[in-house]
Length: 134
Image (cartoon, rainbow, N blue to C red; front, side, top):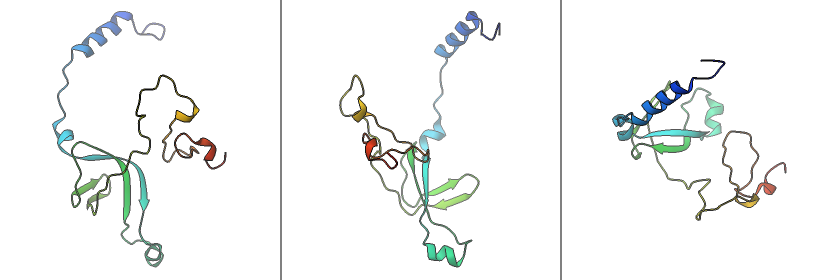
């Protein structure tokens, strides 16, 4: 580095190397389903938790499936916790779908925001005036 910048020739060599590099397919990742979880809900009945705080919990996970399809009854590994059987798998609609037609510019009504667990106060997509605290 010279004066906090990479030399132009080094940048060119790196970009040339990356452009001709062949990526091997990730076989395991493409043949096994995995989930990017963005929300967890504890659905254990409160009276059972009140009786015994160390009771086995029943949780619902929401997120995006990658790889191949998930099926009910499959075993799931949760890192740091263990292996579990899934009771049910269901498909939910996308909370922030892409627009049907191509739009050149976004006006206020067309702006969509989906940010779970980020403390962003937003009502229905495109309706911030109905959000809590507005």
